[in-house]
Length: 210
Image 1 (cartoon, rainbow, N blue to C red):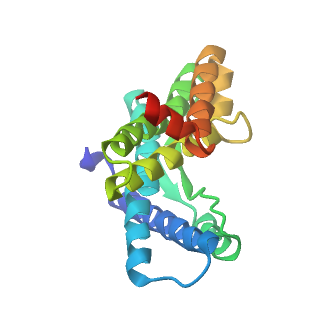
Image 2 (cartoon, rainbow, N blue to C red):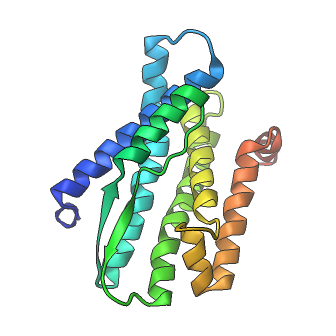
């Protein structure tokens, strides 16, 4: 598989992965306020690498390999301005707007169905990851493993929900143009998981049921 990811693309993915983890780490401490302990900052950075970083990389690779399945060449390209903006916004406002780049597909006349499937691959991967991290959370809700699980659950659910919005160049618009039913399933699932992840008390109720 690695031979299908050129060196330049690997570098772009690693840089974007690290930049997103840095932005989320800065935002975390910005929201908490107070001084930053080096050990705490390193721990949050490592958790960010394992959750949002892995989620982002696999989301983009899902687009890439689905496109390649249909015979197109595809590569992720980082956007240096957006990466810088993510870090600056995290530092100034405690907000992360992570749009570090995009997977560029090279090919003429990509069909609506193929374009829809390629676009759906990213949010679908994010949904699967969010459920996987939720399972990790239930292994030890009050432990470090639980912290990684809940962070990964929240982040990947939000990535799926954001990308399924049917606007601009986001995945949702292309999925909707291809198949309304698939779009409905993905966007409902994404926002349902985001609701469970972010609304206080909902995850606790789910834990008690399970």
